[in-house]
Image (cartoon, rainbow, N blue to C red; front, side):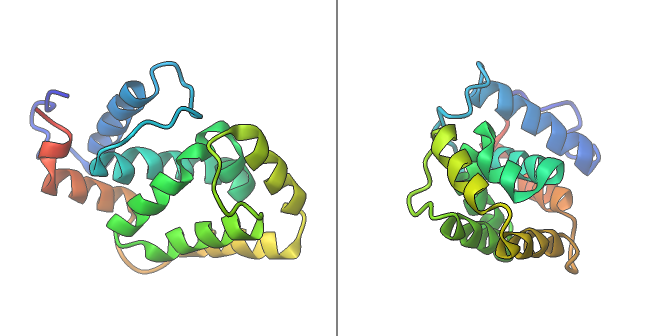
Length: 159
């Protein structure tokens, strides 16, 4: 994408939203989240992480992993690790394992079925709380980390 005018100085939120929206339209022009594209490293950090966060805050891990965009969870795990948020990636991995999804399918139906089977378990509630707790840890907000990544690696996003 062409770099937005003055991108180095725009606020973190505007920068991340601009990049995210471009990546979303580029990666999923038909909004078919089950057809997971091969993404550049920067896209993991912005697109996949932002999709998983949005789904989580709309409906917990059940929605984040079970919805069609849940196909992006393995990419988001990589993005969290790149940002230094390994604990969030680890919680997602524990949730995947708890649901019995050894090989995380990109197809929506098997993920949704496996997650619904465990969603009422107390352990699932503990995993949801663990993911939420990682948001409250000391350190920069997720959006700040993403903006720092964009500014440090503009070649991954801008021409």
